[in-house]
Length: 174
Ligand code: FES
Image (cartoon, rainbow, N blue to C red; front, side, top):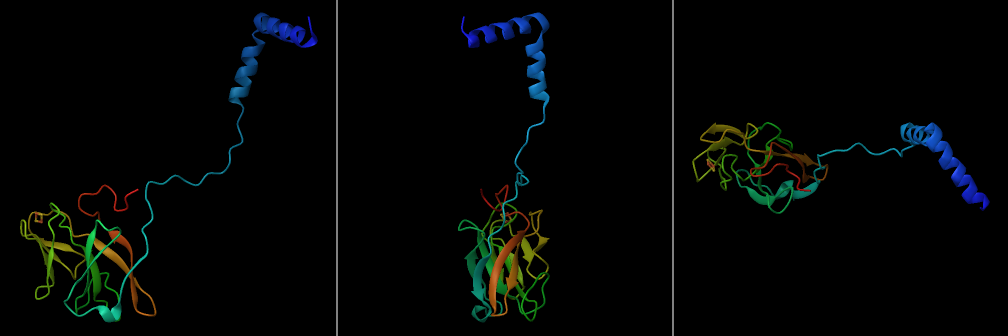
């Protein structure tokens, strides 16, 4: 019998006699393992910072139809001509909203005379100066508002969304 096989045989014998192998195995399993530091898990994906327009492109009451945070999500960028909740710019009157109605995703129209978004499907109305507050209609959620930032040059960026875009479980699709 070679040295190796004799050693294996003796070890096996000791295992059978004293249950030593089991305790060794348990000892190994119970010993803490060194693990590399991992970043915290998250289910929230970051919003892109997307340039929408320059301030000089905006005319009071005229919407710019764009998309954010992806091509499947239509939005309107507006200069309301009066101070608005979360409005940006020198007059705090530049805002942006999802154009999908929070009721059933109808494609909203902006009515400058009323300062509202109106839905052609079931006639919900949302206040563009009050963070998309529902005024009337079957919708139960306010209109998702796009978070905006203007830099010193007057470029306007979308940086996030307040509220959930209609039909999504998350605004940023993974
Ligand atoms: S889809 Fe807009 S009110 Fe119903």
